[in-house]
Image (tube, rainbow, N blue to C red; front, side):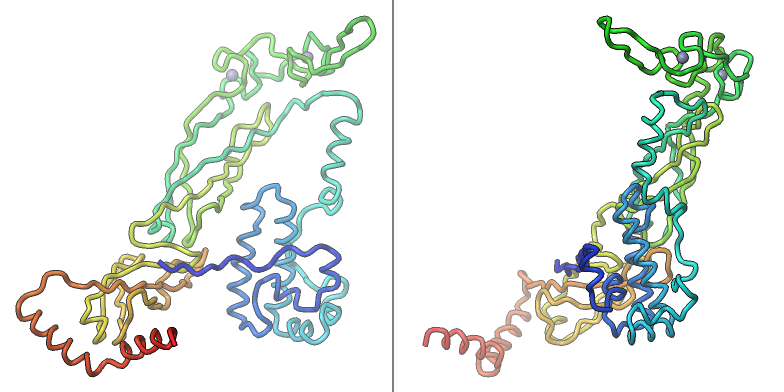
Amino acid sequence: MHLQNKKPKYLSATKYERKNMPDTEYYDLLEVSKSATPDEIKRAYRKQAMKYHPDRNPGDKEAEQKFKQVNEAYEVLKDEQKRAAYDHYGKEGLNGFGGGNPFGGGFDFAGGFADAFGDIFSEFMRGGNGRNQRSYSQRGSDLRYNLNITLEKAFAGCEEEIIIPTTQNCEKCHGHGTKNGEKPSECPTCKGSGTVRRQQGGFFVLETTCPTCGGTGFAVTDPCPECHGTGHKKINKKLKIKIKPGIETNMRIRVPGEGMAGIHGGENGDLYVGIVVEPHKLYERNGEDLYTAVPVSVSCAILGGTVEIPGIDGKKVEVSVPAGTQNDALIKVKGEGMHLYDSEKRGDLYVSVKVIIPTKLTEKQKELIEEFRKESKENQPEIKGFFDKIADMFK
Ligand SMILES: [Zn+2]
Ligand SMILES: [Zn+2]
């Protein structure tokens, strides 16, 4: 099968390069030419936005940055006036549109400061005051679940029921782990500080997290009989996951609040459902396009005709084979591919022709083919031309 290589061409540019780039930057970000139609731009935007979407790349700062740039580019290129100004004068041409921030609404990631200094900042918070105290309430852990779906389901979208092993707050003690269901008392080991000091070898005083309370400063002395003081219990949770048409392998669906239960009133973690689209026996997928192969009889390949194949949407697809079709020829059937993600639009279907040479012939067929051969000897310019070319190579 012939698969077109559609690897993205855009490589991340350094800050220096970006500054000196000609003003096709926005087009480059979306991987379209300057003459792209609004439709092409929209399509390209969807593709790039999906690729760099934070949900798909959790914690990846570079992807997040790219996501912002792609949105910035689209904000300009989708607007006829802004695009024209950009084409003529570059980014400077956009200053007339709404003051300092020409990109209006757009996507806003909370907190410029926290964003830029996040890592350093949290480092200070952790180590700065020299204490290892953890807060009493803690957010539950995120969960990851891999979900396999068929190509048909990926095409049409679906709702899948999954069962995830997770935790939930103990109803009896409201998550506190105490017999009376109230917040536990101060930890007797560390007196509520969350840390203990140990003298080592007479010189060193080592400060470590309190082993009794795990650093929270609170300890359950009278545990809840239901959960044995943990404050939560293990459950298998049934969830329905809605999957939009056009989903691809490696995409992740974030389900907020469906991770592990928060501890002592902390918020729940999130659930990330990673999608794996199973291989299909008939179709190979490349983005929104599908590829398949179809057997074609010799007479159909020579004289032309139509073949029917089952489409991914369950309907029959008629593929018209033009007269004189060669083996391995690729026939494009427009609009019979996959859905673009979360869209009504569809990619194309490419059908690779496999001409089948018959091995068992009736007497009549043999006669006809003999006839055909006699006729061809004098009258087949393609084959004659081919042998002439070979002869030329030895001159
Ligand atoms: Zn309990
Ligand atoms: Zn303690």
